Amino acid sequence: MSSPVFYYLNWIDQLSQGNYNVPETSKARNIQIPGLFDELSTKIEKLTNRLKENELERKKLEKTRRDWTSGVTHDLKTPLSYIQGYSTMLLSDEHQWTFEEKKKFITIIQEKANHMNHLIDDLNDAFRFESNTIQRRIKQLDVVSLVKKIVKDVSKQPAARSKQFRFVSDEETIFYRLDEKLIKRSLVNLLMNAILHNPPNTNITVTVQMNTMLSITISDNGNGMNDEEKNNIFQRYYRGISTSAPIGGTGLGMAIAKQFITAHQGTIHVQSSLGKGTTIVIHLPKQDD
Ligand SMILES: Nc1ncnc2c1ncn2[C@@H]1O[C@H](COP(=O)(O)OP(=O)(O)OP(=O)(O)O)[C@@H](O)[C@H]1O
Ligand SMILES: [Mg+2]
Image (cartoon, rainbow, N blue to C red):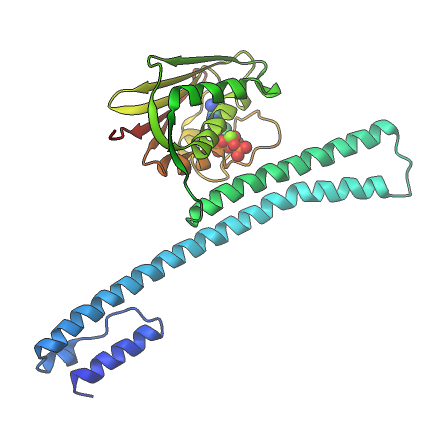
């Protein structure tokens, strides 16, 4: 085994078996390695590193997938157990339920089914994106009217009835290339948070500005967050301790918004103080015309 040929054959053999470490070179280096082998060495080493990187990437993705799967299973099981429980009770011959009781049970079943639906939608978006299978559809549009329309639509929701909305922009129009669906999804998540996690009569102000960057801020004068909440808000499945929001949340809203903003090379930050309110700031890079 003293010839460099065997060294390389052994190396390639190891690669084919999924061992991406560069084998001990001492023996081979002791041998007079002619130019051809030197070049071969560099090439195989490059290949080895590439395969190693791919393997790390694959493992990372695999871990994310596992984390997601266990999270999803847990989150889907909880509402499902309500649906099973209440439907079993309704079908039971042992008791005659009154009309009111039946209505109450069916309402719970419906709420839980809606919650599952919401969760599946969120997961679909977030997970498809994670595994790079989401297709971004970039088109140029006016961000001022887009954001204005989103605020208007969201403010019409029954949950938003007790909140006051304001839209501010110094510009008439700002043309920007983006994926409308992803940006809309992010903004709706942020607006729904300002609605659901704050008391009635909270003011919600949305601004759109173009300076060195495109900035979109969603600001409320509601409950605000403590440091723990601020630090974890972008973690998947994290739900604030002080949230008074009724059932229905999955804790994925902010994580999804961040993912979608990041996909536009943008950043998203939170400024918040307890009792004063929360401002979410989105920055998107200026685009060449
Ligand atoms: N504007 C806000 N004011 C106060 N708390 C907020 C605000 N926005 C987010 N939070 C806190 O951050 C947490 C995480 O928000 P996130 O949107 O990720 O999850 P969620 O709203 O609880 O559930 P969902 O997945 O349905 O959006 C919330 O549970 C809430 O405690
Ligand atoms: Mg939310």
